[in-house]
Image (cartoon, rainbow over all chains, first blue to last red; front, side, top):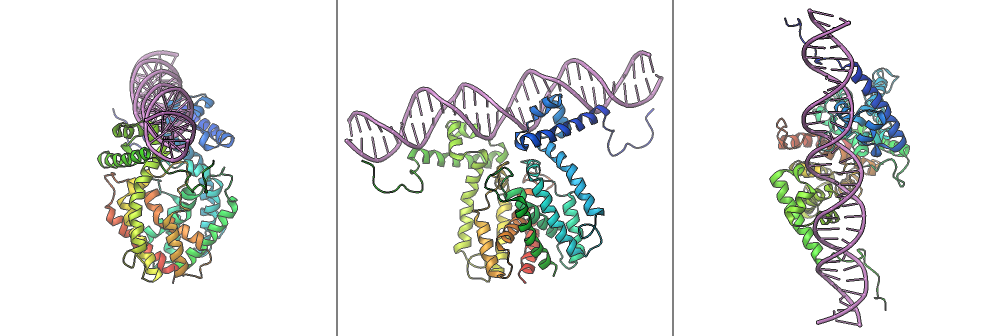
Length: 203
Length: 203
DNA sequence: TTCATAACCGGACTACACCCCGCTTAGTGG
DNA sequence: CCACTAAGCGGGGTGTAGTCCGGTTATGAA
């Protein structure tokens, strides 16, 4: 007989050993990033140090970028928390424009803080998954609330997110560049101009 | 005796054989891109097909991305030409805001047309050189003219360029994705929203 | 024409991302 | 407790980016 009922979204839950290994890999990866920098972390090295086979690493994370994506995701969750249920103006309770400004500035700080991870999480030859990105969703929502008349919300939100994240993901030099300006300074400069952008857009 | 005079900016002109090889490599690379797609072009393959050693390819272009950058640069020059001396509103002669809008729309079309090259020209682990990018320069100039009151021009221009180029460089799926929307449609949707962005910013 | 030298060339070599497939083990139903 | 099966595991194999260095050649000067 077949088992009754429909299968779930995930065909099967992750096996216990697999989950254990994922956790261990993430832990070791975090150590290695802190110790050597993201660009010195290799799949072989990670597997060795975790005491696991190379195949295991790839099955869990698909690609090298996948590892850093997983690391970043953990931080991202904490950031989400602040948006959804933190104090205003970042969290709910303030006017939309204010929230948008606050979001941009917080997001810039977040990205600057984790920029090595964020850069390493980009999979070359694979588009950055923005479609299901919480950033895009959040900006889209606030934009619809703040300027209901701007007809092209979807696209505009995409461009705003690009304006916010692009400079750091694409154009900025990496963290260990000696001639780089202080991260805080960059974030606040970009933040100021984000504010101008948003406030004029929704005037 | 030492030769008189100061040395030039470039210590020495490129040797004739080197120049010949560069030209040949670019030519063959263009063929291969057209024939196989950018992601199927390998350094070994290029060297073989050009009848040259691999070392030569790397000396001329530094990295894999460097090749595509060189290819794109040739197109880019033609684009520049239109900005500097073409008919308005893209070229000089129209009000700054109009030129900015026109620039964005032309740039989007340009990037969509060459998006595979543009994507391939990104060197992972190396920031995209925006500092000396003509796009940034152009936007910066027009922005200063169109809204002299927006204090943060430099950064704002950077963000605008990111809003323009980011979606295509970062977030869009590549050309040979079957489910992708028509390039022209993407460019014009993004273009419409670029217009909203610029016109409100400089209102 | 010949010489000196700096730039150039080729291709073997290294390192790393990612694939593959036979073996092992966790989870399940009897 | 046992047998069965699918998921998981390991680590050798492959392809490609990028490095290195001994031999070669273009170029300018004598």
